[in-house]
Length: 423
Image: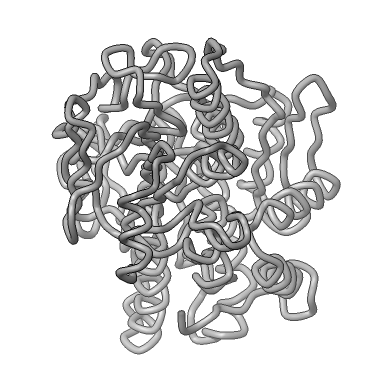
């Protein structure tokens, strides 16, 4: 920050709003404050925002990480008002929050004081205390984790190609929610389509994809017919479904189930459960299930009414919203509107979630879409809807173009599966 900008910030009499987190909720909150008489500082540990619903496509090699990330400074510059230092970006990890003094401490640089705070830093993987899961399982919640999965998968294929040690080669995906289903389905398609052409020395039947779920169903929030369709499509692609299978322990080369049986696993992907980051415990804010911050129905912390919480990190009266993009976007926007109401002396309004539905893709020309108060779609039409929704939701035209081309190349083009190398 230049001396002129710093001096301007010190003498600026507008209320200072700090937004922690450049995910769906944080960006939505910043947008909703665009016309408010405030100055905003957006904070994130990364210099970019990640489109998390497509991380599994990075993990399986269809997309490069740059295709689904967008610079936080570019966002601030785009959404900001011309000629006004209305919003700025600060890269750093929030280590402490003093809600009484209204001060935020970061891992680098000076502390920040605020008049209003919007906490929207998201959540991280929850291993539910399963022994060995944190040490040996691969989550796919961040860009770095997705790249780690991709590199591990490619490296292992090259290893067994050279050594012929293909016995017991398998990928175990834990959790049959949308992420687990999408990951397992895509891995199975890669095995079926890529191995014969890229690794002709390997027998695809020797590389298993196993999807574990502790309940008796896949995609539990979906309509039963869509769940049945998804299970059938996974099995048709060669995914081995293990329903009602709870994980007792994750080891380096296998997964131990609660019934005592063991599954060989050259890679275990953890696609279930979320929890607050450990640093949230130091923030002096009330926490509920999974360490998430408890807020009232207007998204404010009751003990600290100048603190709003949006996205997955918040839990309204101990009732969590679905971990989807829409709840995060809507809570971020509502936090901004309620903050503006406080500035104007108006009462805040309770948050009401408008359920637009949800969808998940299983593979090429196969998806399920559950539209709220609308039809239940599956097959090609649901898959096309999934493509359109995800591409349209990306930030930046470049990202939309690159993702469109890459997904068309993977799913529609003549070469049905190509692993992208590089980052």
